[in-house]
Image (cartoon, rainbow, N blue to C red; front, side, top):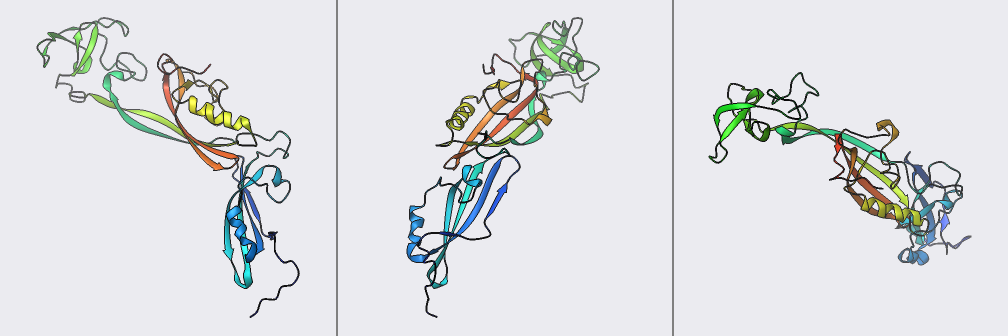
Length: 297
């Protein structure tokens, strides 16, 4: 059947009904618009630009084109499907629009193998009725052990000193832990490690950057520079966006230091004006020693 041209010559894209937008609940908006265009003009796909505003208000103030697909239909008509991306957390577009989405965070608690002498109950009573290694006639901070009849594997160690459950040390005040050498204590004998609970958080935020927000680019750079630093709040002392939702807590201070550590950060150029930041946080119940893992100032 021959093509009959009538009405709009489709020399420029015409928006079709059925376009969509969606919001992920954290402030990231995505959408798709379909446009009809004469195939003779559909070569514009090669000139497609990211970062053009959405064709419909109010989405044109915070959503930008990110990807295009061309479908060549019959009768010389092409369909352009253009995807849009933006950030908005519910405020009126153009009035205090946010730079960063809310954090989308998941958590997991697992176990990892750690030296037994690092257990919090090894010398002190925290979660048990007695220290694992005991304290002899001394205290947790200054144990005093009696000499043992067991011998060290190396001759240069000399006399060993015994604690509870077959624990042995190189000095009567503790010193280097040699191991659980007494087979009488079958549940400890030969044990060198224990399974320590480890908590980790994985999160994703999106930031508005590029020509739309220099502040967004500053967030990317601040996240990069904060890896390896600890924190006792959700924002690393106001240097970063909120990375932990309130339901997980707002203050994280342990006996040894701040409980949160920014362990890794990954970046992705999600759209021309939007950056995706994925990150992981390690949680320590005792806290991260500030001399090793300092906090940001």
